[in-house]
Image (cartoon, rainbow, N blue to C red; front, side, top):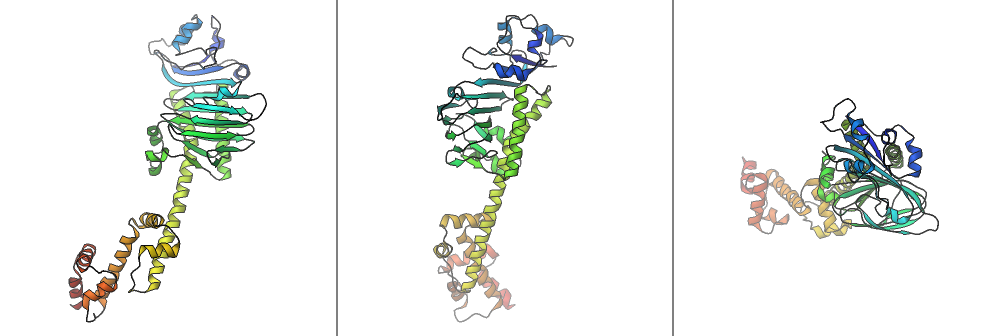
Length: 404
């Protein structure tokens, strides 16, 4: 059986109406700090009235002990999640922001230095949710701030702006609502937020990210999540993401939570997918653009070499000069398009040209040696080795087949 508990600044005796979800949570949420916890009931409880008999009659501290760190402290720290004999499924903690200092833990586990930049009373709301190894945080605040510090020393944080009526800068990126930003573990972030801002993040281990990106090779590489990144999607997709996340935030804050383990797991996956989808889409778009750009450079190199004539070997430095690209760019283009560097590919082209001549033409007085020299193979011993490795026979054997 699943029970939904609300833990707040409780009286000495706890009426059932204050614990179970049967009152106006939205009104209560506007004036109180609160915590929701969804837990699987103790297997030893009897089905008939099990939850009620455990909760009714317990004093304030007993409830706190049963549900972790329990009641928010006077400093405003939110209540903990279910422990003891219960199995934690999901907990949500929401509280009002009274000063910029309250935003220090804007993301669960963060240690940020917040500086208020604009005059006015600091207002807002912060929500932390724990979903079996994944932390979800959402906040809205006003006015302008500067934030600097580490999001999480051990885990990766992926975030997005849900709404903003001002400018948002994250490192050197200009962030629009719906953009996805990757904060690697232990990497210092710095940002400036103007106007009223609303954000959402997930924080989880790189291994967890790998589980949710099965089939996406680039995103399963740990190096991908160890790099600061921003993904900027088309406007219509960004708007849909913001609407979906905004709706989920309101559901969490109002207590409209799933009541079963399966429902909570599905919500967890929906939240994670809301962030990863943006990264997946742009990674493929970037890959496609880079692939087409690299393939075009390879084609241009081939056309250039063909135009020079069959007897003219081409050096890599010449190609870099002609196409105004670095050696690194040229090598990357060839490796991604053909699986080998430009030197290896141009060598195979020259070997193919020699092979074609040996099969189709009468040789001059210089014979095979002269043809090899004309195509840039000054070391005849290496030429013979390269030739045999590629074609499975020596130049002489190729020539003999042509004469047969």
